[in-house]
Length: 304
Image 1: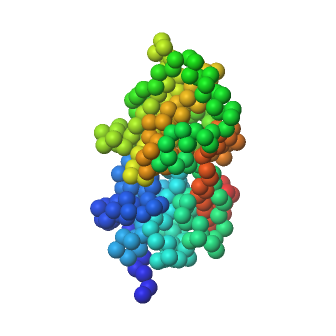
Image 2: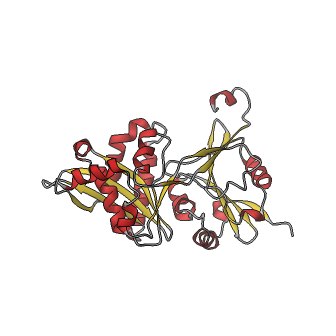
Image 3: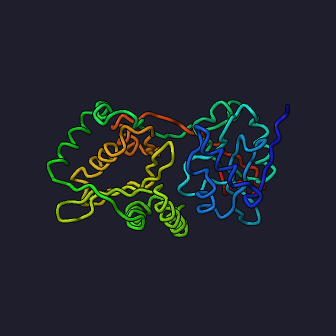
């Protein structure tokens, strides 16, 4: 029987059924929950297949009178969540194209087969399975990483917790200039989301300080029933020559090892960042970038 596929504005979506789909499916990532989407997106639609057996968020904005689909700040990948065999990519893209003239979408790691007939670009994501004991995970560390951790251990560093505001503020101060597209409002929305999720034990902040209490590195992590997401990982100037971030990630792995979780490093196309996460034995789990530009000329030239 032909599936029923609808494109609904968020206020017409049954949040309970949507979030149940996200929880139940292997590719149901935290970014696709209604809590996350409502907090980060100014407006979003949802593609719903049958009775929420598969769903796909579609964040949208409007500029120069033209509505477009985009990937918001602090959302790595969305795409179709659920059984991709129940709907074709042609049906999905027809709905997208009927709503927007421009689309810049990241489909998730299990959408490869769905996108078989569509031109997409694979993007880097790296994950570490945590269900193994700590020492077994460490066996996959590169030798230079092990040496850097040994150096850090001699400094009597202190592993502890931190605040969401502290993590967001330092991340923005250290890396904000590299991400001009991320606006002040994006950081504010994410901080409010993080503080809300922290109350539900779904946002964790871990830090490394020296014996005098100086902050050397800090990580903001999100958590659901399958993954820990490394959303913001910051090394401060004082921590760079102390290998503080190497030690921090190792301590996070130690804290959560033996649990049925993936540590989602969030990946990077930057060679240095990618190399750093790969040194922990992280394995590739690519997601897929889809781009469609049907804007009228000359707007088409401004959004390539």
